[in-house]
Amino acid sequence: MMINISKAVQLLKENDYFIILSHQNPDGDTLGGAFALFFALRKLGKKVKFECENSIPKKYEFLTDALINDAFDDGYVVAVDVADEKLLGDGLRKKYAGKVCLAVDHHLSHREFSDFTLVENKAAACEIVLSIIEKLGVEIDKQIADCLYVGIATDTGCFRYTNTTENTHLCAAKLIGLGAESGRINTAIFETKTKTYAALERLALSGLEMHFDGRCALMCVTEKMFKESGSDETECDGISALPRQIEGVLVGVTVREKAENEYKISVRTNEPVDACEICAKLGGGGHVRASGCTVKGTLDEVKKIVLDTVKESL
Image 1 (cartoon, helix red, strand yellow):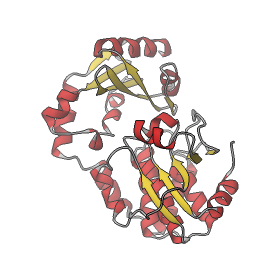
Image 2 (tube, rainbow, N blue to C red; image 1 turned 120 degrees about the horizontal axis):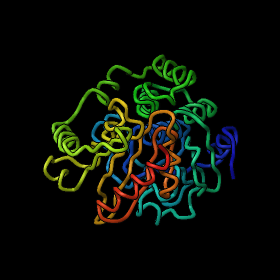
Image 3 (cartoon, rainbow, N blue to C red; image 1 turned 180 degrees about the vertical axis):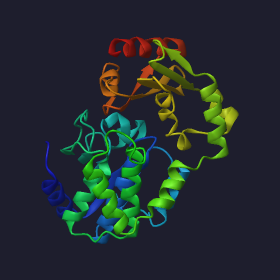
Image 4 (spheres, rainbow, N blue to C red; image 1 turned 180 degrees about the horizontal axis):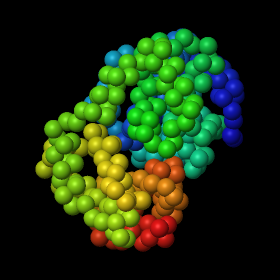
């Protein structure tokens, strides 16, 4: 059932034990929103714990100093920034299939999987979580403000992407006023690379392919590259933005090896191409400028499938 913020706040007030879920391969928005809600509910005297399929990337670990799970079994399950149940990851999806009570999300391609669903067309899920926390009557301290700022900054590319709105800036300004350390956060997330990630980026860019008269750039990230660089998926969520940054490119594609004959596809687009439309044809979804999906097959087969789909949109 689709609901509004007031109903979501009512549901959160009515329950006392919460399990908050983020999507697999977590980014700043899913973590920032989940952590902010975690700390806000804790302030209300609720018992809370957080779960994610994968490890928290190092660059977000500074948000987790006080993230200590309470001990309990069953609780009210809330998913934050999860557009599809399969994005929870295989482990959490099996564990919580049919048990998610509330989903808070900003993807218009959201596929309902919870009892109650709150979806608003915002630049980041953290904009919605901010409104929820305010309506809960929780005082937003520096810890919560940092979490929410991280989510808003990461999903807007530090306010560079076209999804950034007036409300996005107003939310960020409010959070800075409440103590969010925007300068430190922006430096940590956008201006700092680990040596292993830098090595991975170099390997990936060395195989960059240009297609359709330079309107599409495609880059592959393989398990071999992870091993050679010493990097892993926890520190490379920003790599998908690179192909789109090339002059003249309308569609940037990153093909990332997940398992044998299985690849995660990240699509980033410039106007007028719709990334969500491309990924929806391949069983995925997301936003107009940033979407993803999973495609099975050999690397060559996957690249052909994706490029054929991109061609239809160019």
